[in-house]
Image (tube, rainbow, N blue to C red; front, side, top):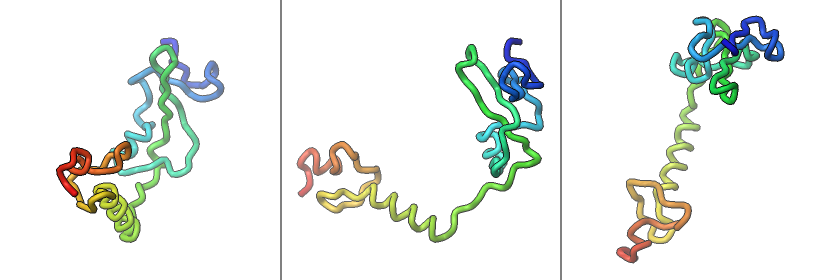
Length: 116
């Protein structure tokens, strides 16, 4: 139990737990997101260490988490426009079902000479 340090005495004042041993009132960012929450500016409450201490996951208090923010209609429209631009071939102007490669900067048809 090398990483079990709930007081943070050995790990710079941050309570530390081994993998799968954190208290249930704490969650990672990913776990918060699955619950529709976000850290909301709170400080890190604890950490999980594993793989000889090479890996770390920060934990936040669930009771202090805030609801996840939703994109506004204007933001959603901007995202849709940007994604459509990524599917439009700059050479032929066709809108494809896939994103155009940034390496070739043209669709598969233009790359193989199948379209003008």
